[in-house]
Image (tube, rainbow over all chains, first blue to last red; front, side):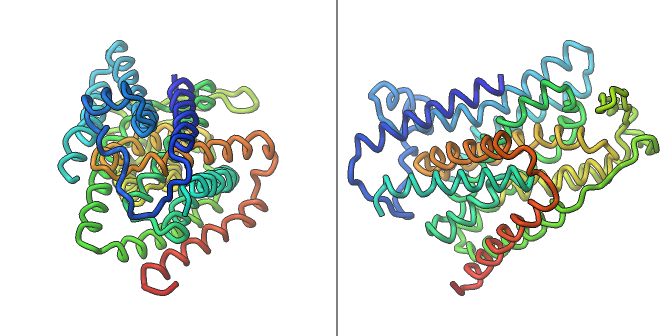
Length: 112
Length: 283
């Protein structure tokens, strides 16, 4: 599961960066340029970006895959503890999972 | 600078970082972040965000081996995460606030200090004698924070977490450092698990690897949603660091010894000094 998440994101990264460079030949880079992923940090924007073949959208997807992998690990841990009747540790796992979601969907957008 | 050149240079930096990181056990972010800050003048939150992406990539690379060997203690790891995750969320938020307040130089100096602090941890290899049991505290008993693993000679070694309260305190600090600076902080986690929880080294290392991924995702989630993870930095850095770590583990498996650490740890020390100088206004 870990491997799949990592491999998927690395494949997307590699294909995405090659495509991006090919489609933007000779473009410059500076540390103060704006982040190209900003338009794709919401579900609607991301889906639209992927549908229109925006390379930055695919690269953002690669990042999401990488960030999602530990979330899946925590969720499967939660499921495992719940199934084995370890309710206290399951509650801890649930709290950890909810805090991760909080960071991604509430805290991050709030401090932008 | 041309984007193509930048991507190639960053990927190459990643390969070197992944290699040094895997040989020293400190991870690649401790090299990638200073290089981004100093050589590419990257704003601090973007550098930290990129660092966390490399942390996630490397943690996933090595993690599957630990899971297969069944030495990761998911229970203890998840228990400590109740402290590391809030630490990371707070750390990432703190870094963003400090950047908005134009206090990046303070972040640079603090990062240099943290990097220097991680170096002694990579040198020391505590040998916890598994035959001497440590007294578990009440929380450890109540939550069942125990387990066993099979050592090289085939013996099953039982263990029970000892002092959970200081371990939680250090875990929070490790999370804070990870979220603020974009590093994995595995050194602090392993030391805490060996010293306070009295876990065997292999279990501590494997469990730390699991935790690094979760803590990394906490900080990365905030920085990503706040718009501080640039995919044009994240992709080459992740690809390069993963390649470097893979080379380190496959091509140089026999090199993970004290002599190699002595060779490479000064590199991290030099980067730390450069970062501090940048923060103070010199260089």
